[in-house]
Length: 277
Image (tube, rainbow, N blue to C red):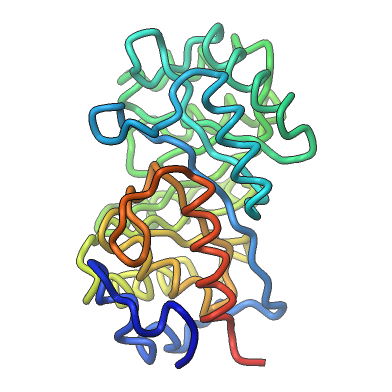
């Protein structure tokens, strides 16, 4: 294996081991290999974790512009309130979407609907109904109670659904029994196993659970296994994502100073580990 990533494992040695595991056959292997690279700008993090984390609408707009210039094709973000907490409040959602859309008008933008923003699913659904500026899509975590309530509210507004399916949860089973599953934009296969040595195998198990859906799948990991899982997605020709929500370090272990730096590293890794012709 050649290239910059082949000999610089840094803090993430699992990126460069287990390639055979990542290439194991799964029944849903795509007929047309391509990659959509999404940037996840901030997540539920705060500035204590990274001084470079985009928080305000202006921060998000600038980070989105830089990430798109670096190669991101889609955006996922968490609107924040004045205390830096994730929120679905329409004033903050509208402001974030408006600012980012002005910066990158041709790029799809999505937001979270995570239960940590409001524990009651009906309240979250009501917030979706109150948005004046609509995102292109929103993620719904299927292991959370009331996921279908929130998903239905998104469908009613014409907002695309990213169905978040976490490993080691009942999310896949719940999603596969939902009668409206064919209406989602894509499935987000979220590997919560942060061990770089085992995350690829965990990812394959989840992909096999999701086989046969006929839906686009975006595969990603987090923290110390983020790059391992991104490599797995690249090898399999799946959509993937990277950004400061998922990881705060580059593949060589150096701190990431921007989402754009993470996107550039991801793009290089995708080229390094792209599927066999």
